[in-house]
Length: 153
Image: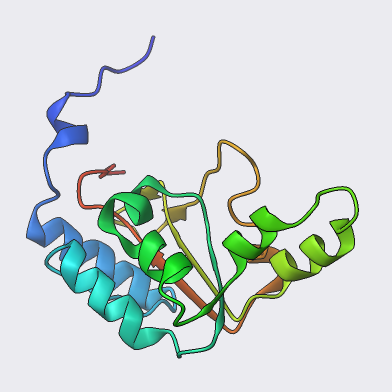
């Protein structure tokens, strides 16, 4: 029998003390963690972190879309945005070029589905294509997590 999860667990913002505990645990696991106040602060920080002219892949993410980060990266002209280039290519004649672009961006920006207090991150993809470059280990990865999805363990 499944244990019911209270509805507020998935809708209320995570309390600051939980965020701090998760941040400390992630730091202990080798991650650099910053807790930002809102989407505007995240947009500014992402802009500060990613060098102008870098090739950047944005993974499919409602967090990135709703925050405006996806648009900032893919339409600003500041970066060599991978996603619009790939979407404009012919899937039949440019398959190898698409594969190479997706496998080698300088930066991958995405979000995680779950952050736990003990410092675990869960990345999930409905399309199985949101993080095609993850195994290639680009030099820089940036992730975000909305404060509304919180799962204590």
